[in-house]
Image (tube, rainbow, N blue to C red; front, side, top):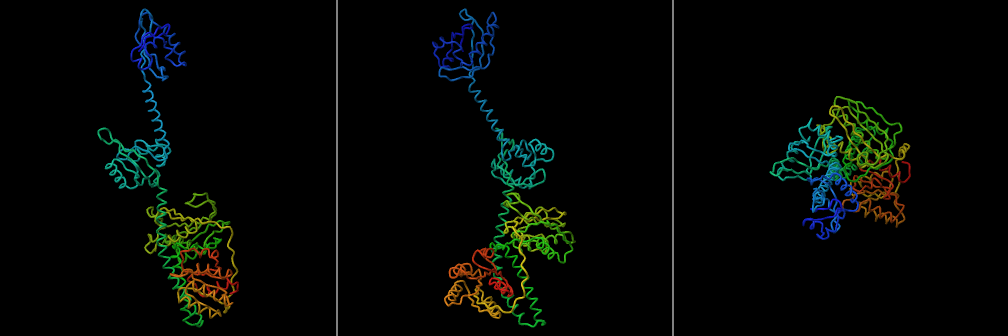
Length: 617
């Protein structure tokens, strides 16, 4: 404290605390006025205060009063924030003022820091991307931030808290056992990190969330509340499920591809020999009729292996611009044979062509229609719609931006239970007593290989709709004119390579009947040497037919690379029952001029040879 003259403002006396705090000596203080303790910008304020003090000064000394907050300057330039209390008195016969400044600089700094901290916390709480909450141990929310409210489908926290109090005793967990496990962990360890569980929002939607929370207790250890941070991981969970489904399909594909490869080799031998036997039998004989039936059964078996091949990692679809209206109608009508239901079509008159494998998309439509018919055992309506759509990236699934054709197949059947919706595309999952569980898995696999997307929506008792998006093509597939009936002869020099001896014998027997000169080899290396020898003798082969896959030996792809070096004009056809290498989908880029998928009949063999040679068959 210090005493100063009320008129001259001269400092007359200071105590030791003032000397220590301000840094001036007593002698320096006595040469100063109180103006010297203030920054220049407060001098006028002090003069006005002293003028008011003199006018109101009582005749006798009065009690103290607060003079407000002031800034005082220390000798080293430090500015103090002080709260001043003053007393009027007479000192050595002069009217004076006793000033008692209390240094509150640190207190104000602490309060300001606390306000800033609270403001930052409030800003973080309000603007956090994830949900932040406080809740009772029973699960009733005490406070939530806007992100938490949005997670539950509300516009603001107040609406959510009101809903929580009015309609729910606590957090709406989808599975109560998950809540019990959460409580057990937080009681045992005091906190939980990245705990994943399911909640139900205000609209009844089930969401996956990841939660990091802790238990808050008072000084006596009593539990007050839980507080934590919640993140919506529903999209991540869906992606994980999609990846798991893909890995299942890949595993099934490896198994299915191997089975299909061997089975198609067997079917090729059966189909070829049945055709040869049919050619040698009389037209009106009972044997010929039986052979014809055997041939039809073999072709049906080929369709079954085609479903297995759809799962294979390789075997990319052979895509072209496909006009969909006729394909949709033919495929649906075929699948509806014998059904109690009827089918209606709603097709855009200007429907774009799809960039697709015609056979595989026909299989997709058949499977979806069969699935719809089976969902309506007493009959009903199947509706097939198709239209054009231009999508932005991420609008539908993970499809990139572009033009697509959307195909929808709806039924009026029993619908699919919510707990089954996420599993219907899994291999071997079925709710039907006679179902194989491969139909919808086949559809899913074909859609994925076409860079398309498929979704399903269904309500119990109201029916189901499947939506399929396929990339649109630039032009409509040209319809080739009918091929005339082939003549009996096909006189060509042909090199035939296949690792299966029965297939080589069957092809050789058939082609020699047509007048062809046939050389057969068991692998690609032998085929290359045979081709080299023919070139050196001046009698090159007109056409080469090669199997793509030769276990333990050189296959058709590697052999083709050697043949192109020997003869850039080599005319070659690739054949395979299955391949993990997608050569069949882009055979021309590998130098082949034709494709012959197994199993094939002898008519298909003759036709593809004639086509690559430019001859009429």
